[in-house]
Amino acid sequence: MGHRLSKIYTRTGDDGSTGLGSGDRVPKDSLRVEAYGTVDELNSLTGLILASPELDSDIRDVLTKVQHQLFDLGGELSIPGSTAISAKAVADLEQALDRLNADLPPLKDFVLPGGTRVAADCHVARTVCRRAERRLCTLSREETVNEISLQYLNRLSDLLFVMARAVNRNAGAAEPLWQPGQS
Image (cartoon, rainbow, N blue to C red; front, side, top):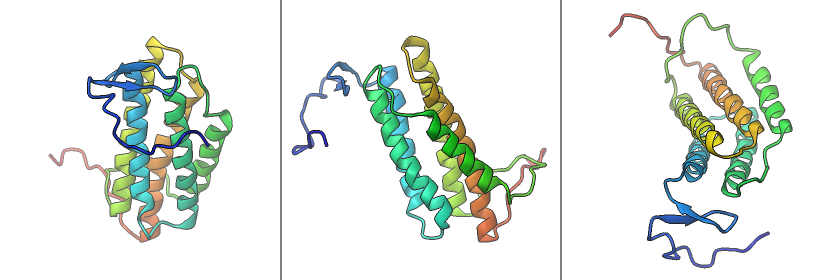
């Protein structure tokens, strides 16, 4: 294990800069920091979902693994040129997607975020995942990024959508569907 933080505040960021894992200093609002900061936000929301006692063990196991992968992704993004997310991580998400989606009714309408609290939290995490993906896309236009990490975030947002549906189904909650013209 690397060095441990014995002191949480360092005052080195008081000037609006932060240190990357490479040791380089960059502005706190740089594209790279925005990308890994949004991944960190997504990881925090994943922890919020995991704090729900009503999650079934399959979803809990998948999300626990996702949390570790998101931490790996944040590390990857904090060290330019490094790679931590592999094609296997994307394949694992696809397997979980297929497994969770297999018992869900086919979609005929758009689903609104909601139902149970946990399902709504999955939808919030999904939208933050899409934002992380957008931040990584923006970064990729300026710097080299791991293309598999983009695939990972794309698949993860799909998985969070399917999880929201599965959570509602498991709880016996009606899936809120969009009804055009209800505004």
